[in-house]
Length: 139
Image (cartoon, one colour):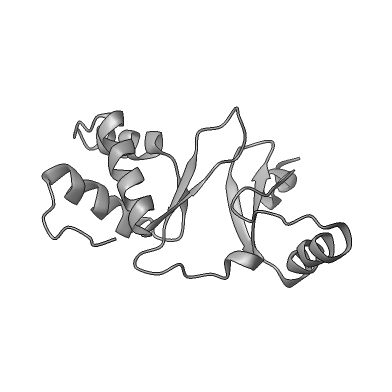
């Protein structure tokens, strides 16, 4: 899909946030709060609309975690910077942080499930739950 060269002020603001957080996961609410703290009002509907447009254009990846969590997004720019077949997510049950990992061992598990059990994992919707290193060290 061809990208529009014209950008509104809201699009420019959102794009500046995406550039600043490239490679990190975020929600539409994270963007809203980010600008609210800078005393800039951006409507949540506008943010979602722009994110969905960027998802369609292939510049943003959208991750659905579960029915209780807001969708997460990740700005990847023009090209996805990781191998989607080896890309998995870890979610901390304590602090709620979402991490992505590129892991050969998990990719081997995915391959095993495909070959031996006829089940193909969707790496964009596969989430492993546990406790992150930061929360483990707090104990």
